[in-house]
Length: 350
Image (cartoon, rainbow, N blue to C red; front, top):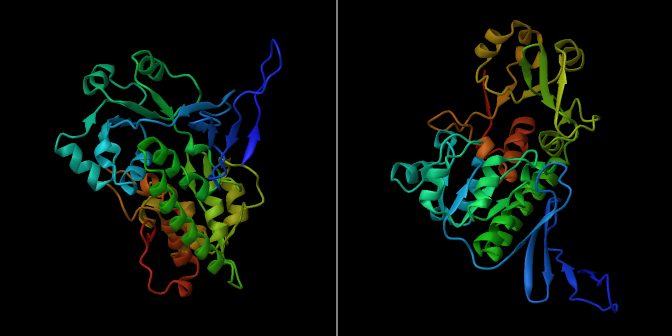
């Protein structure tokens, strides 16, 4: 443990209660745990992008009734056997989880209206003990109103993590909130162990096939930056992402011509957004047909699991199960390494 001593700024100098930073978080950069006397705190270091200070939450009595605001939060409740704790969600049509869809059909999960403008009357009506929120900029009138009503708001900024295991480790955030820390630790350790086993397996390959990603919207080709979450998967799966030298953590916005120049001979095309067949791709832009991966029908998308309302489960549960995502990609790039594996999220869309 790393001890940080707090000192009084006036009067006689005296040592206050030491604060210890727990080392139980291995991969995530956005949160940690602290111990101060008899109290334990969950500290979210950057509750929203470029936040000026962290937020500390005292770990104590667990909330029994919770409202979530992102579909990516829901799988953590499933992993921790706490689905019944979630009683409200903004815009249920985005959910892919069969369990939560069933709970909604049974009237156990309330639709709180459009995300970003949650219906306060409905929210107050179900009287949650807590709201787990994400904030892209630190200014949210809706979240301000929720806090003013006396409902605690827990900021989850797992979307700022740059590594697959870092994002998955946020299960410990939910574990602390739900009073299931040991279970969260155990689940994450299993996921991390399998991910690292697969990563090591893929590192043994002699050749790394080249990878292209993304599609065109308007006049711009959107694709993962070299330090993006997706690019890390490509590398760990034994592939050569053609933009891996780039240091962008978000998304690149490039011209068609620049992508074609670098990627027209790529062996694999992985990730085509909402285009779920090569016919759809050709219909959007005939120039896709000139790429080698397209000609060889080596085009893959994360559309194998789509919810009843069109939501991609990859963007719901994939963040919590990077081991499955990595296995999918290894199956694509190096099928001989996982001969009996059946993919979960990705499939060939020829």
